[in-house]
Length: 291
Length: 317
Image (cartoon, rainbow over the protein chains, first blue to last red):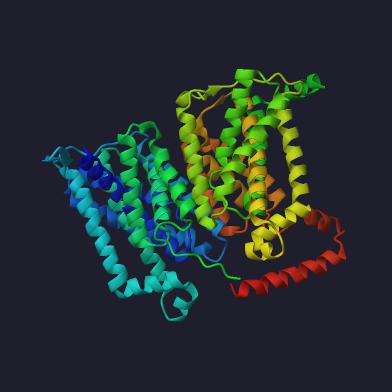
C-alpha cells in the first residue's frame, strides 16, 4: 500500500517537476513569473493528442512533436509579449503573461471545444506489474523514466555545454553577461524553448496518465507547478525537481488518507508552511539584504 | 429619498444598471488592492480570497442572524480585516514573489475550505436575499465607492500613507527611519482586506448568489490587472482601470466567443504600449491643476528635482 502510493506520488510529482522547471529557469534569468507556462503545458497535451489520434504516431514521437511545437510557441510568446517589456516594471510583464494565458486558454476552448478529450486507446498499452502488495502500471514507470531522462539531459545542458554556461552567467547577472559578449536575447529565447519543451512533455504524459485533455487543465497544473518551484527555491533547478516530487507525494498521501475533497489545498498548505519556516524555499539561495 | 432613487433607476436599462454596479464593485476592490500593492508595494495574488470571505460572512450574517444591512457591511469589513491581520502577521515577513505565491496559496486554500464547509452550502453556493435598504442597492454601492475613494485619498495623503510609501521605496531605509515595517505592512494588508470584504458583501447582496469558485485565481488576477493597468499607486488610475476592465467584457460581448480572446490580447497590448499603466507616474490632482493653468510653481520645481533624482537613481540599479 505504502509503496504503491509512493509510486503514484512520484509519477504525479515528476510531471509537476517537469512544468516547475520551466517556471524556475525563466524566473532565474529574467525574474518573471511566466503565468502562460501552464497554458504551454496544455498546448503540449493537445499537440500530443492530435499527433497520436490523427497522425497515428508512436507515443514517443508524439512527445517529440509536442516538444518541438511548444518550443516554437514559447519562443514566439517571449518575442511578442515579454521582450518589449523587459525594461519596464516586473508587474507589467506579469500582467502581460496573464494576458497571454487567458488568450491561449480561450483559443484552445474555441478550437477544441469545452469538453475533455481522451487519448485514443492503445497508444500506450498499460500493463500492471505486481511488486509485493503494490500494483504499479507500466504507464507510471514510463512517466518516471521519461521525466528522469529529460531532467538528466537538462542538467547536462545547463552544466556541460556552452549555452548552459551562458544561461548560468545570464541568471547570475544579466548586464555583466551582456558585457562579456553573451548574446542575452538568444540565451533568453533558448531558456524559454527549453522550459516549454519540458512542459510539453509533461503535458503529453499527464494526458496519458489521466486520459483527459481539456482547455483549462493548464491553470491548476500551472499554479501547482509554480508552487513546487517556489517550494524548492525559485531559480534553483534541483529545487524545482525536489519541490515537484515533494508536492506530488504529499498530495497523493493526503488523498489516500481521506482528504480527497481538499486535494487542491494540500499543495498550497504545504507551500505556505514550508515558506514560513524557510522563507526562500528548500534549496533557494539566501537573499542578501543590501544596505 | 429612497423612492426618488427608485424612480430614477426605473429609467435605466437593467442591463446597464448591472454593468454600472459591476464597475462600482470593481473600483472598490481595485482601491483595496491598490493600498496593498500600489502604496505599500506588497504583491498580492490572492485578493479575491478577502472578497470571498467578505461575501460569505455577510451572506451568513444575513441568512442566519438577519442582521440589518448597514451593520452587516461594517461588521463584515472588520471580520475580513481581522482574518487578514491574522494571516498577514506570519506571511508578510516574506518578500517579493514568495509573498505573492503565499497569498495565491492562501486564496486557493480559502476557496477549497468554502467548497467543503456546511455553512457555505459546499459547492452549491449560497442564495442571498436582497436586503431591505431604504436606498436601492445600486445607489448604496456607489455611495460606498465614493466613501472608499475619499478614505483612500486620506490614507494617501496622511502620515500613515507616507510611511507605507517609505516601506514600498526601501524597507531597510524605512526601518532605519524608525518605521515599524511589519506593523505598517500588516495594517495596510488589513485595510485592503477591509475594503475587499465590503466589496464582497456588496457583490453577494447585489448578485443574490455566490459560489466559492467565483473567487478563484482568475478573480484575483482580474483585480490585479485593474490596479496595474490603471497605474500602481494611483487612485484615479485604479478607478479608470477598474471601469475599463469591468466594462470591457460587456462591450466586447458582440464578439461572442472571441471576447475573452480579445480581452487577453488587450491586456498584452496595453502593457506593451503603456507599461506603467494608464495613470502611472502622474497625479490626477496635478493634471486637473495643470489643465486649469493653476499649477503651483513650487511643485513644478520639486517635480523636476524628483524626476532628476529618479533618473539618476535608475542608472545604477
